[in-house]
Length: 387
Image 1 (cartoon, one colour):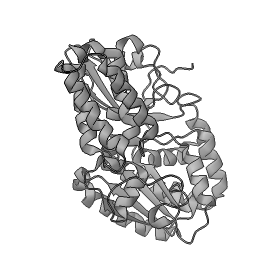
Image 2 (cartoon, one colour):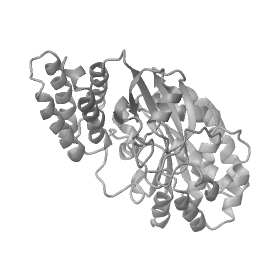
Image 3 (cartoon, one colour):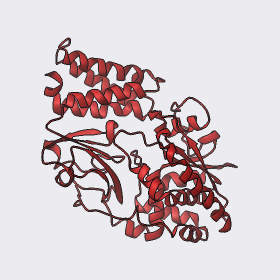
Image 4 (cartoon, one colour):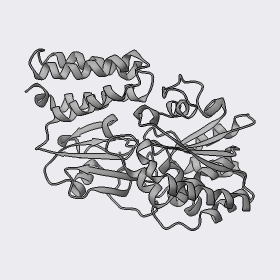
């Protein structure tokens, strides 16, 4: 498996200034050509799902409708992730011009940023930036306007269809798929929903070209990624790194010398133990991440970590589907019963089966991903759960 050495990149937070110039240039080029470049670049969604960005834009471009929409998902609710907040604070023009570029390519004239409730303090600055850009779009002949919508603190609204339901004034619950948002999204119109970081990457590709972009990362994980690093780390904060590095290299750089586990991808990701650091690749060919990297040293109880995750999930489950609504509660009650020795340690095996069932039967990514942390922690740290 191809791996990259841990290397830092400085593209996302480069000073703003060229966005309108780049956008104006794209208005005079064939949209199909840029979609092919975007697909060839290998850019995948930076929110964690990893769908090819160029393919999503292609499907929305081909959809027939009198109105289309572009939505920036800024509902950064994954525990341990804080990269999108930093992007919106430092380079919001890159995000909004990326949305405008998407609008031009797919034929959308309206764009919304869906901002998580806890980030409302950013709204005045973002509104000013959007107002300025709306005027600049008119000057270059682009029919595209930006607006803002707010979440209410629901984790499930990070899922694109629950986000759309919320924007329409409904309860934030996932929709059945298909249809997908690219054909029937916001107000039942074709809609592109991309993460904050993804839109910035499209502007980077516009500037440096897809060939230069492909030099970063690996064949299966092109480009770079912002990592939100927290926990028992000697270096905490946000770092821009190439995809495809081994977790061993990552821990050597950021760990405190006593790292026993890394939670890759937040509460919905996988907990990797020390013995698997060398073989684990941070990327789509290994373990993908939306950005959260939580480092745990030997002083941490993995039972407490798992309990914290399950408590979070049972609270944030929207309750719409039974596998998630009941499953999250039963997993939490189950490990508590084992810890109190009211259930034998073998009961963990039954709970593992429940977690696997949730992966294939839950309606959306919330219920489907609960088993990631649960199974990986039980498999690798069972002794900490039992005793």
